[in-house]
Length: 238
Image (cartoon, rainbow, N blue to C red; front, side, top):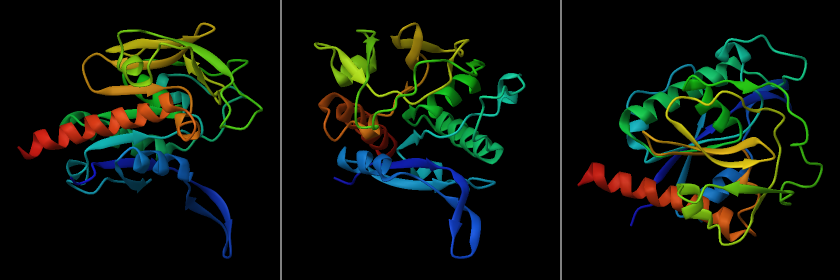
């Protein structure tokens, strides 16, 4: 059976090259490795002004990746001094990806910044700065325990017979919850995961792509996403 095609958003940022510092597409291989190992075929979509017509209709799922902060103007605020890495071109591009995926009913897995984008696009807002959620250990090390809602897609995927431990690389978090979202995990009062009640969206604040190689539960999160994408693909071709 053909692998489901998973669109993976990829940011641009200035990087040194033989031609000097230039805007480059940058995406850590952990994202695409996790999708491939889960049975999907990652399709990297670099930031562009427009999404080619019918491109998303050829995809079976959308992975919104992590990275720098959203422009606080998206939720009606001025940036404070902690905000970093804002790229309005990425905000606009991933907004298009999200809206097209929603329009055609693609499953969405949103990670870290991706969770924040989904929340903001649904009318929510963010705390621009929170303390205690940026670890100094390597990303492959889980440093915090989260409480997972038992009746969620997240719980179904990762299992909650044991405590769920995750890494933590975010200095922002959800403040006001977006419309149609339900909280599915928390840690010390900070929202760590949400799901849509009106669409196939699972969003987490941590980085499971760095944990999945050694953590069965985190690997299962990608496997469940790819499985839902495959089911969606079969529906459209039947």
